[in-house]
Picture 1: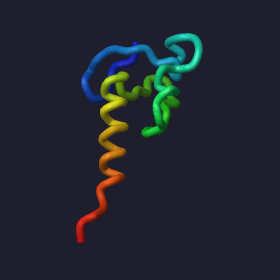
Picture 2 (picture 1 turned 45 degrees about the horizontal axis):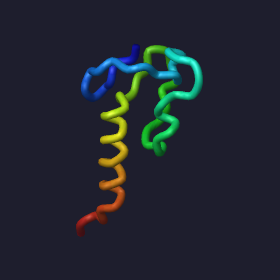
Picture 3 (picture 1 turned 180 degrees about the vertical axis):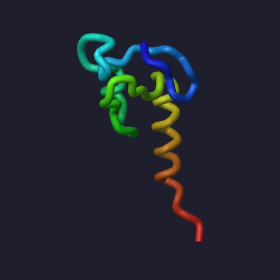
Picture 4 (picture 1 turned 90 degrees about the horizontal axis):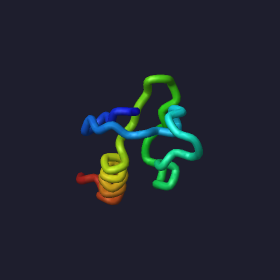
Length: 65
């Protein structure tokens, strides 16, 4: 099991070989680099969805002068 970097929840990650088939995160829009090294981790499904929404909101907000 992987551990979420944000909330500490345990979840399965196919990118790290923890399950067969494509990882659940491939169904979401790309937001972060994929974990590549053994022991690397990312966010659980809930936190990754929140991170994607946060980044989309930041990209839509123009910088202040």
